[in-house]
Picture 1: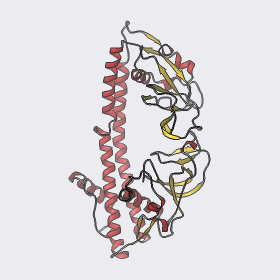
Picture 2: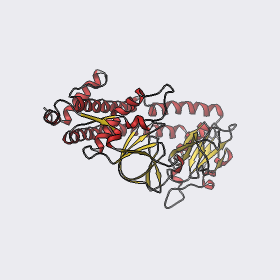
Picture 3: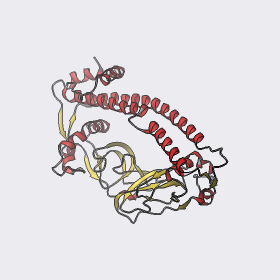
Picture 4: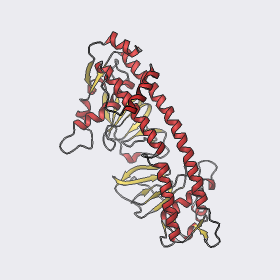
Length: 387
């Protein structure tokens, strides 16, 4: 018998108290727009995106749960420290003393999305109404039971993370193989292939501030990737985005309308000379991070980039190269192929186990979600390791 079994039989053998989320925590929202984010801010800024942004001010300094009210509706994060929040992010603080915040985090992560799906109105809500969140029911087992559940799930989370790290390391090795293949493929030794300067095939353009724009559907790119979405765009043709500061090795190929800030350049490409996707792959092979011109934050200038050499084979050859590299890139990146799918499977196994243990704590019965036999066997093995 595990420690959790013993605690449940001793402290709550018959039933567990249930109450609503609104009775166990203070629930409020942030007040800021998503475009209040600062690329290199000091504090965490929680929006409804998968990854938090940064900002230079904070409103809270506490332990909290953050729930996405729209976009990635129902996603939950646990955070301790100084932070700010977007106006459609729910911030849960001041929890009842007989509840562990981390325990409620696991409950919400396990059941909130299913609850929200069952409480959609006829218009198929794409946001959370405060009343719906407030009325979400949470179990309140004794603190000793909560602590044991948190200990087990934290341990299982760590184990899952370690296994995922191993798979990620293997994936990284494969990507390095891909980079070697790409760089070799784009190394032209044919004297008939002209080598010219980048400025002969494209024009490098600066980014600019987006704070005057409203929220919308067009992505805003910085050197770290997408920062937010706005209702305007600076360019609507295929382009290669080249970081001016920061992560100089992170180039982006964009073929839909976008906005970009001043930490990243965009390019207007002469399609009669080069295919934009070919430029993207070729510049990746040139490792532009090696051209850093600054001693502090890595930086690139237009003057340096304009002089970068690019091989320009015939358009038909460029198309074939792009097709080959697209296919190879898909093998390395597609979540449904190879190791990324294994990483996804690890996460599903974790969710299965979390579901089972929280159901057991609340009802005394194991009623996990349906799963396949392979997942059952894997979960049984990992469960025994947690005891």
